[in-house]
Image (cartoon, rainbow over all chains, first blue to last red; front, top):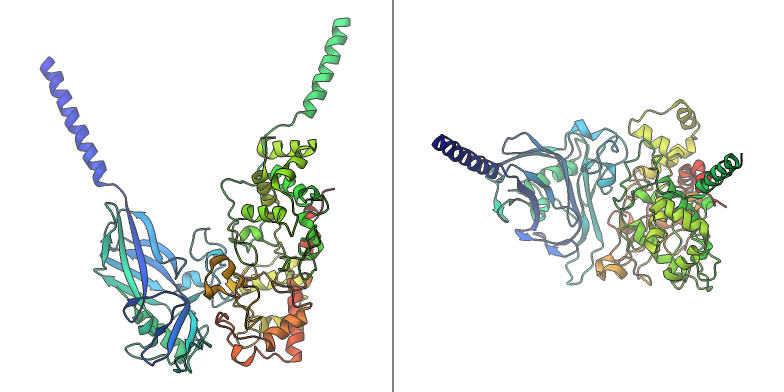
Length: 246
Length: 357
């Protein structure tokens, strides 16, 4: 009888130990996706001059864009919407997750049409599309959200003196100007045992001097809304999306 | 018989006493938020209660908070002027004028920084400043609270709101913040335009008001939001009629008041001030952080032809190279007519916002 009780106790301990191990393997991880702005491959800051391929100097005052329907590792929707807003919010997500490594990323830059024309107050207080959280990036009428906002000043006179009096404003929205991004093998760094951070890069030199087209800041310094056939709007969209890399 | 009478009078006395007992059982206050507004975020450590709002309202109009008992918050924030004061800059109890214009108090519960330079991060923090400021109400908080504690009515109201009679400046700030969070304005003609633009169905009453908006006002609205018109929308959009930002709007080429840079020490912030709401703008003259413009005409002229270039000028002021958006007289009048559509009469006549005494 005693040996049976002893055996049962031993089995119980083994089972309990087994359970404990299982708990450990299902612990939550914190996963982040950070966008790092660059200028010609170097990390950049707002309000600091950078010289472009055309000799003009650029100071950026705002770099912002929305993403929607973001999924990680094909696990389905992870974040309905995010707003990257340099200097204010540089993470597309920063959340507790079962994911500890970002292998694949899928998202749209811009706001998909399912969200773009709804009352912008209907989203929850912490939602990126809530009008209180968009930092002015909603036109207030039908076109909806400003998908991409690049603002700043350029010094277009190469006389050796700072004269940043040439403003540039690139605001593009409207359905059709979003783009689907799919990245594989995204660089992920373990910040500690449970927190991992994946990185995307946004190179503003590429934005102006893209592989396929150049935005000439002297003459192409302003775009708003972005109708389907406006050349500068299309250039803004394409250059921006080619500037966003893993 | 004597025993019955004794019991009767004892009961009467007990009931009388019961009426005078002040209890602490605060009632949640439900904000009356317009349907097209986001939900106001209420700080967890200062939930809205009816008792807190009532106390805050009394305190807002309380002159004992000033050094010579002559000035309350309402002295510089008058209801009929959308809680501004009509002065270029406000003058404190010692006759010293401040250097900045009194801001209208509208929808502050939706905002995340306060003062023209954005130096306060919460309403509770902001409220603590004017009382002790030597050029404003010039009273120490310890004295101000002592004066309140001499008033049994305040002691009762503080107990009802916070469950203590040992209150201090933080309780005063919390109560006033609760009252200020109730100052919600969302019933102007601008709101009707906003709702229609965003596909929000109007009630019959609203539809009738919408239909009464004049052609001139509508032309002004088109200019207001047109990027090639008056281009106001970049800074004054959405249900708040403002973005939450600090901008240099081209008032000066060089700065006597550094604005945001006085807080951050960052040269790139020089000349930047909080973008104010345009709600009730026709009631809140004079305009700008220093009250330099007496009328809406002067403001419109500034954006039309008076923009000054400087290193921190907002790049969104895209027509700065030609001094502004170059409106003609017809357009200026239309824009001014539209700006009157931001007046919310129900806000400035709301009895819940007036002096309780």
